[in-house]
Amino acid sequence: MHQKSNFQPKLSEETRYFISIVESKFLQLENTIQKAVKPEIPSVMQPSVVCKKMGWSRSKFEQFKREGLFRTFKIGGKVYVYTSDLIGLFPKDFF
Image 1 (spheres, rainbow, N blue to C red):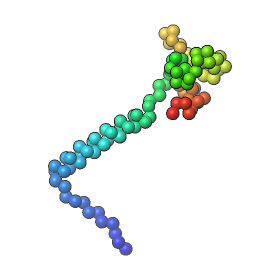
Image 2 (tube, one colour):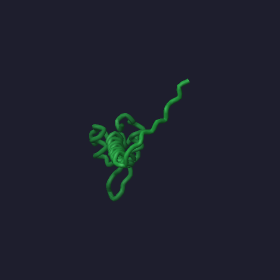
Image 3 (cartoon, rainbow, N blue to C red):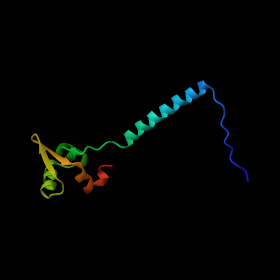
Image 4 (cartoon, helix red, strand yellow):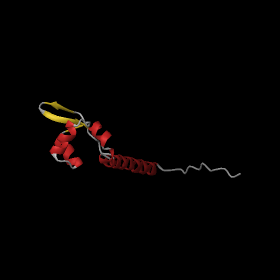
């Protein structure tokens, strides 16, 4: 049976340094791509943002709110919606 060779070439210090720089650049690029692919979703959103993202009018938003499809709360006079409620109702619209 033929065994796999674990041949490790001898690399100069200069070559190892160059490889380490290339590896770090690839890691930075990978992190940048991951952030671009998976945008962070906030835990709460204001109604204007929800309406824009979902393509709703404000009256449609209020109708859904009255029907109890999602929870809203106020902080300092501003209305907020839990994003988790919206994702539960409309998962395809957030991803």
